[in-house]
Image (tube, rainbow, N blue to C red):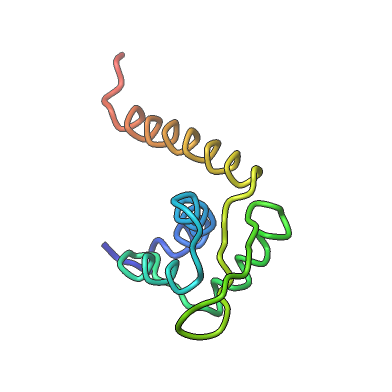
Length: 110
């Protein structure tokens, strides 16, 4: 598979992947980046921080500061109510989209 071919799709899905990661519990940026690094959606801080700020402005995410035993305080992100709702809606949409792709790939009956 040519990874460049799907860049636009990956960029559009990154927000939903972040919602999915944060839905697993409170996480900080380094954890998000580590989880994404093992996938085709690996990203850099320069991409992730602006996206997280946008998602917070849209009230999809919230955060809280927590002291760290190994360094400065960390900002832990968590899903806000709107983020939970948007993630649930996206999961439903994704199911219908994959069903549509499968259905359109079947031979038509004439």
